[in-house]
Picture 1 (cartoon, rainbow, N blue to C red):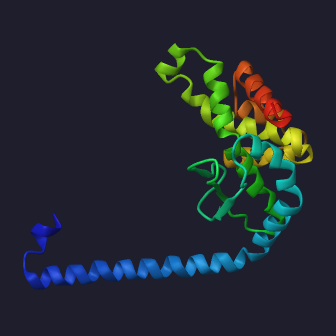
Picture 2 (cartoon, helix red, strand yellow; picture 1 turned 120 degrees about the vertical axis):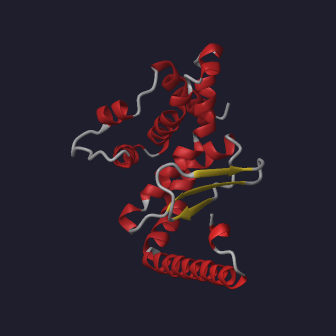
Length: 214
């Protein structure tokens, strides 16, 4: 369409310069935005680093080692929310990208996304073990994958950092746009992220096996 409109060489040159200027402005804007956000979230970064080194990683180290994720490396990424992203090239090279908290008070949100990602493969195995080949071929199990990781993260925290479980549940309820009540969020959490009991039991059992070192 543009080629038919801009037929002459001067017109095409103008278009090229116009597009280039848009790219330059876009890159400049996002660079400035990134630098500004990095500075604004500096205190949150410090809080995440301190909490990870002093509390979270020591509690998760056994699970990470026994699931061949020994490095426990993660990256704080502004665009990411509760889903996170995992790069797992080998036993020695693995990394999890999580959302970048805005304030020190929300620093635990980075951990919540991390454990959600860290149990993802284990949850997938439990889904496969507790569904039929016909269900898997039909795609009926696809809806369990996301909920399995969310519920698996809660199950892992229940074993290693149980005091954080209620806030983990509230965090994932908020990712759905729901406002958690001030009381126990367990019922609302289970309703929001439903999972067949055999799959949930399978995830919990595998976590226990991993933490037991078997």
